[in-house]
Amino acid sequence: MTPRTTDWWRHAAIYQVYPRSFADGNGDGIGDLAGVRSRLGYLQQLGIEAIWFSPWYLTPMADAGYDVTDFRRIDPRFGTLAEAEKLISEAHERGLRIIVDVVPNHVSDEHAWFTAALDAAPGSPERDLFWFRDGRGDSGELPPNEWQSIFGGPAWTRVPDGQWYLHLFAPQQPDLNWRNPLVRAEYEDILRFWFDRGVDGIRVDSAAMCSKDPTLPDYDHALSPNPHPYVDLDDNHDIYRGWRAVADSYPEPRALIGEVWLADSARFARYLRNDELHSAFNFDFLGCSWDADALRAVIDQTLAAHASVSAPSTWVLSNHDVTRHVTRYGRPDTSTAAGIRQYNPVVNEDLGRRRARAAGLLTMALPGAVYIYQGEELGLPEVEDIPADRRDDPIYHRTGGKDPGRDGCRVPLPWSGTSEPYGFSPEGAATSPWLPQPAAWAQLSAATQNTDPHSTLNLYRRALAVRAAEPSLGDGPMRWLDSAPGVLAFTRGQEFTCVVNLSTTPVPLPGDAQILVSSQPLNQAELPGDTSVWLRTTA
Ligand code: NOJ
Ligand code: CA
Picture 1 (spheres, rainbow, N blue to C red):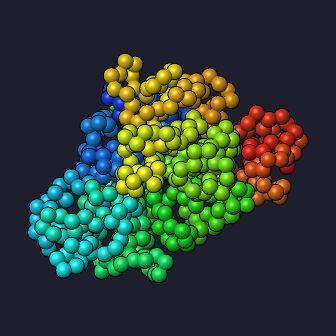
Picture 2 (picture 1 turned 30 degrees about the vertical axis):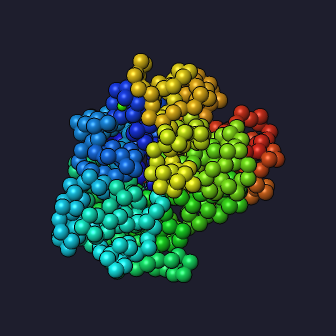
Picture 3 (picture 1 turned 90 degrees about the vertical axis):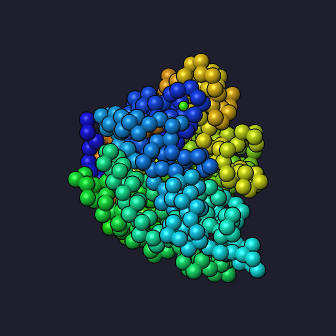
């Protein structure tokens, strides 16, 4: 089957595969393309329509593959280009679209451009592909400005000849200079490289950060909130207009999906104008606490911002950068659910999972596309007790452990069995998974959940099947219904209603409604706290 409509990105359920942690085909403890290929049946059965792959390119793994040495090669840990091509066509045969991750803000310090820049002289064309500058101070011993890396520490590193280069992330991720036309040409060619191989969409990493104020001014958020010298500069829009032209040059247009973290929803929407990106992740919703009024306000604001540019909204609860939402929603103080990454060992995991299941039904019922992060369908919690010497994330190491980092949401998936590697690696593999898996995960494995009708896995399968069959779900309008405090209720179309009870008090259900899916077993009369239900309601 070839995948269906051309505007699939307006409504699709998209599953994020973090290749390193999804499934290990060759037994070295690291997930790979062979592992993904062996699990395509699982993804098809889950009922998703597209797979987004976090980076699978050649990389020294200083930032788990978001430091790319060569966008046209697959990292040997993951497989080969030929295997990626097979994976793309096998996925298409199953009706699944493929989205790959492209990282325009920076490359790896092992990228040929950067090694050439290091070998070249200050002021050379090679250095102009990046942000090389002389330092301040009597002998240039101070960085060119005070910008800080998002991963902690200064955003500048000095090279042996005394110049400094900019890296908004780790030092192994030098920022590209998007004012240089070679950078533009190269990335448009990378898009073509993957589109020519049948890829259906691109996820654009750190999309709002590429352009920089070339005067590189110091920046103090408290003193001068606007304009920012490297977030959301107007030149970014030009970049994506160029990319959109590439995407639209294919007979079946390819989708561009931006990672755009901006507090201002009107500025966010500008990236979704009809000659720029097709959609972008909605992080306001992800960061919102488990609170009916707060969620309703975020939903309304999201829909309004997207409506202004006729773009579809997206809904996402977790990804490879944030604490898994079972854990966020299980924090003792609900306001901390808004913190996307923090230590707080006191977690009520059962409550968190109950809310996560309810939130899953909410997101799958909202207008637009929905993202599911691998393991979310298993109700996995964050793993918070990874020993320091097993942690890999540069955020953890560069902040001296003050920020727990992202390893806890990247632990290899449990597929089957009662002990590590839980089917992540093949039987008898000599190497254990690259991050340790908790003992309690035997209960959460896909195989265990497969046979339990009330499991989170079966809840997601049921919900995705209903969502795919229900014409009023996905893209299209929604209408709020009056509801009790702490309850969200809305309709889609004439006959579909979603009710989410975020309070602790049960609320009555309409007597004549047919229950399509519920996040907890229900009796017909009432909806308990922290529970969602989808209803068929005939007027
Ligand atoms: C956002 C990605 O999602 C994250 O994992 C990565 O570390 C940064 N961008 C830098 O590429
Ligand atoms: Ca492997």
